[in-house]
Image 1 (cartoon, rainbow, N blue to C red):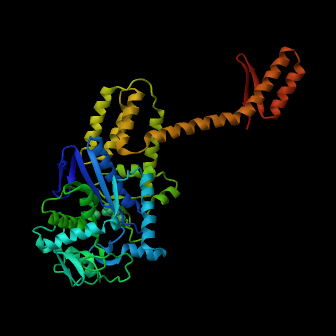
Image 2: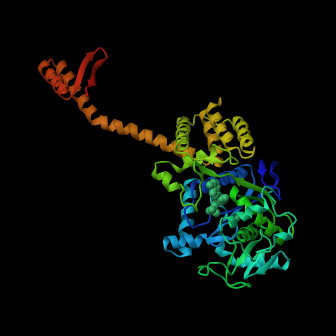
Length: 478
Ligand code: AMP
Ligand code: ZN
């Protein structure tokens, strides 16, 4: 497939190190609050990428961390610890907060048909791995101790700004905002690998280390967890675009300095979901969650569909109107699927042709909106229902829009409504039919008095009858 690579700033042919195998890493959630639908846009698009790689026949191993320690409110190693902030807000311990929001994250993912990665590793599980990596970096001269903390020395690198688009001034933003500059740093781009002295002496989670009791920096966790589960050569690393700098930049600095060779080939970044008032952000505290969408009556899959309608490399503005439009379009697709019949043999020739079209759409820098267009094209194809259904099920292995399930539900609902109406009509209809039959018998017996009495009784029930050559017809007056 062709995929944009943030490292080269180009759409490139995606080629893993080992033919047929893909090692994929995803930056996981910081579990101090619910994931917002912006975070989930990133996970939805990464999920489509993983499923498309599998669809293409790759054997994918995907790992993801869960950040339950070390992520400060500023990515430049300053501010409060996000986990501690969450625990204080809810009067719980950090581990309670981590467990609660990790479970909530995976529950949201399930509702959005986001597959759980093969490996999910909380950062607090890997303290020995972080320490080993930091020791290695110190040994190789890439890290130094200062004021109780261990820092990565970015001046040791020829090219720290690997993604190019960032400038040294970027890290000064925090300083301008009134956060104290860290006097221990030799270079302003240096970052913390291990904290023993932070402003937060009451840090709840601390571990012993060669540098004293403390806790890891945020960036080291992804480098070490990826190395632990996916080895020294990573094929693709994913995250939201805000992670490119400094988080991914720092991951590359650490991993390549530690390993002594290039580490990850391909960097996949999803642009943000914004609202009219700007980026949706957890730390701002005002954000939309999957539960909120559900409370408002939206099926979470409609949000997935909404995301697939846009390209991952364009920022996406969320609006209720946009979501409503997606709900209507999704409903129409489901009705079209529900109307298809298993009416014969699947035409394998047509399946092959259409699969190629779908692969071409998704294989072109994961163009999901063109993938949806291909789905519409299946409905228009000159082939039978069985072939169309086979194709829709096939595409849905990647799109995960639950089309088959939703269509079955719709068919069931329609059948229920029909029998429901019949049931309601039944009692009344049966009564009318019974009386009409009795009237006919009376007429045949030339008992016109009884026949008239039945007609009057029916009229009293609001039923008007007419005798026609085709038999007695009736209408019900409201
Ligand atoms: P966090 O839980 O803050 O560590 O973020 C989890 C993921 O969501 C990361 O990959 C972020 O880059 C991504 N992310 C954060 N904000 C947004 C947003 N508004 N839209 C899309 N992705 C986002
Ligand atoms: Zn990460």
